Length: 406
Image 1 (cartoon, rainbow, N blue to C red):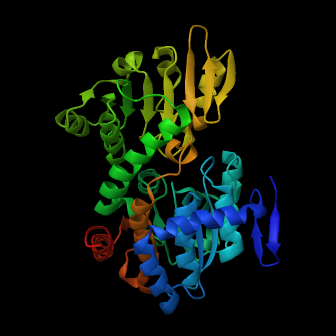
Image 2 (image 1 turned 90 degrees about the vertical axis):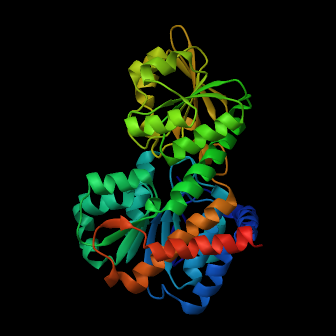
Image 3 (image 1 turned 180 degrees about the vertical axis):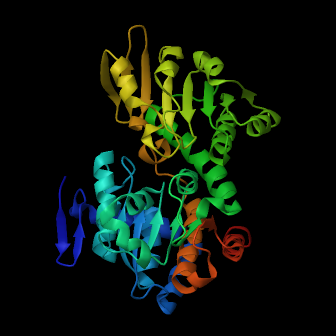
């Protein structure tokens, strides 16, 4: 790992600051296709809603994120951010440091241990507001003694994902500050999760493998909004999709949408490709790898790498070989299983993540939610909760203005 301090007041750990010109082009391209965020940047620069505040962030650090960070910093915020293993764009990171003075702790090739260390570095900046992705910042906040004092000074937080929302409600119950769950909004669930994730997962799969999806037997494990969008886009590409979903109501929905449904034990032996998209740990484990056929392609589009138990697969394997930049072959006694992107999010690790316009809407939800926390926190209960409905309507109206009436 390389530690780089570009200026005395900007501390960061990034891959290579000299990549900034390439990252600047990426951010400029994204901004050109983000009219909602351009509108917000202009208003934030005038109104300075975050003046004097520090925002600590855990979110995938790529070009669209760069436009969002422009909005926050021009709105007066001091920002520290970390990303996720395998999804960081090193050139974008360099531009964010140089152009916006953001403290960035993120590199594409970081390990999960590095990631947790970087999360702590973000918290070391004593943030007044946090914006989380998978509840990693919340976990360190609630579980490490050195961070307990931060809880009382936090105005509030946002959480981007289904996984993080589940963790906050099941594992880290708190009544100290409000956390607005971006994923509870219909706009996020339908527009970003169903259409954005569905499109970007297919893009990541094809970039990683260069294989044809038409006619492939694909098993999608998990039929939430992300899973249903992925299943629909795969079917649109001519794949024969089987959905594995333990919730009987959601399985019924998949059936009514025209998908085959089956138990995981019945679905796996016939699969050419298996995609996990549940946000839960060890969805694919040793007993599941044993059921799979030779040459099956395995990908994760859920949140954490540990959705697929790679240590168990590595233990079973006689050898592990890099086949393509985003493909590793695990050779077992009688077959080889191919894992994409080391089980990191395939749409971000092998692709560029959700389409720019989709994230224009998603990051607008983040921006206005953070603004509400900064300016109107007394109106929020100190618990995890949905984004206020008026914010969702405002963002939807902006999307209609720029997408439909343009």
